[in-house]
Amino acid sequence: MAEYDNLCKILAEKYPRDFIRWLLNQEPQTIEILKTELSIEPIRADSVTFLQTENRILHLEFQTTVKSQKPISLRMLDYYVRLTRKYQVPVTQIVIFLQETSDEIAFTEEYVSEVTTHRYRVIRMWEQDSAIFLGNVALLPLAPLTQTDSAQVLLSQVAEEIAKILDIETRQNTAAYTEILAGLKFEKDFIRQLLREDIMQESVIYQDILQKGEQKEALRFLNRQLNRRFGEIDSSIFERIRVLSTEQLEQLGEEFLDFSNVSDLVVWLEKNTNI
Image 1 (cartoon, rainbow, N blue to C red):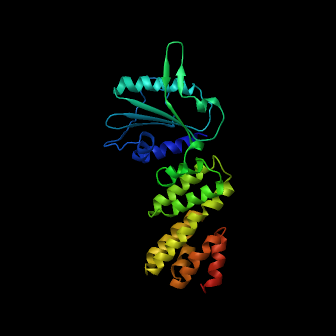
Image 2 (cartoon, rainbow, N blue to C red):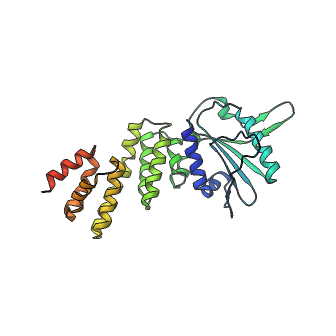
């Protein structure tokens, strides 16, 4: 399950400002991602992120499972002491549980011993309002894990938001992150069926490029989409695509969504060209 936690760490460090807005409800002037082990004998896990603003450290820990070599509450106390001693600024600690559970550890927000009580925040993704995540590209991959009465409606909304992302690379990365995290809650076939809306939007963008007469850009775009779906396309196949007319390119842009593999593309080329 570590891959899910690590993906969330990647998101937090890629979009630190958005995570700080969400979790601290403030607009930081400066942000630094702290890369520190905190001690000679670290207990740091891969899913831990430290974000420092001008006046505070935000310590995030993402959890998929409730099992831990060292109790989470004790670990939070340990981090708090180290961070405070090293940086001498206020520290906000938040444990974010990704996968729904009834285990009491996901509902525990303090470490208690005979002489010490240490408190931290806990966020249970399955209790979160989806609207917060649907409206933010940085948080969008977490949206499938939020509260919903209808999985189909929620994933459809996620797909619609992904389709609105204008930058191709950002859209593709966001779709990939979302599909991975959605796997914590939904079946893979169901995810792919609903997130196919994103692929449909790719076709719309492709058609728009063609309508503007940018045939070279359309070819590059189509090549990226085919490679994305089927892996790298053989250069001989792409050469056959490159000489297609605008009308044929439009037709291919609509029909390739129904292709299951590269052989379907080859069959289409044989039927629709004389090459």
